[in-house]
Amino acid sequence: VCEAVRKAVGDDYTVMLDSTWSYRYEEALRVGRAIEEMNFYWYEDPLADQDLYNYVKLKQKLDIPILATEYPIGGLDSYIPWITERATDFLRGDVAVKGGITTILKAAHLAEAFRMNFETHHGGNSLNNFANLHVIMAIRNTEFFEVLLPDAMQKYGLAQDITPDRDGFVHAPTAPGLGADIDFELIERKKIGVLS
Image 1 (cartoon, rainbow, N blue to C red):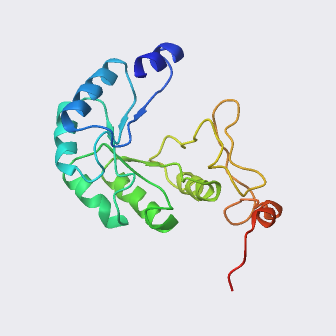
Image 2: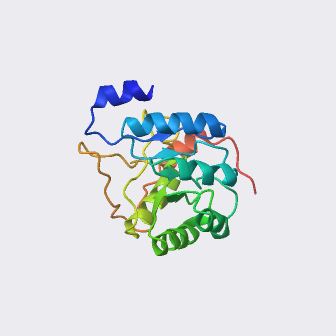
Image 3: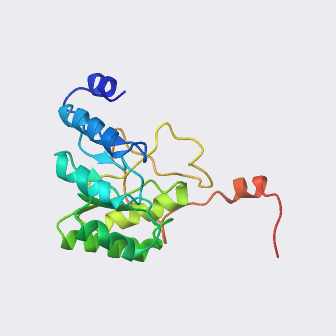
């Protein structure tokens, strides 16, 4: 699949691999070496999210940057061993699973102090993505805003969702708060009941 993607988009297109904890160490090393040869930008979550020991070994053996820390449970403290053990090249997180906007901003500043980028994860739904977008607009050590394509189920509940323009850029919302326009008519139509 990686070879087909690289061939389809050419050598000038930035591609990454998110393998979502698919491999044991030996497999992760083999895949990592293969995508290094194809000039992939980063190698995301190749091992189980708590396998710090093997992430350290993998990072020592590969030249491609490793991106981890998307889901290990916990807030700001969960990033410390990844930095001190040099188990990842980037930190990652999103407001929904890492303690909210404040915690993610602190994590991004922690990464910056160690000369690392902090990349936000797709928030899983429209409102979380607005919060993640605000985070990346407030930090300088980030390069990407993750958008799932094709988009479908994760876009829900907003009148206007975040959509990349024809050049692949997303733009800062200008409305108050998170800037999201909640589709209350849709919510009313889908409502099953109200707890009181």
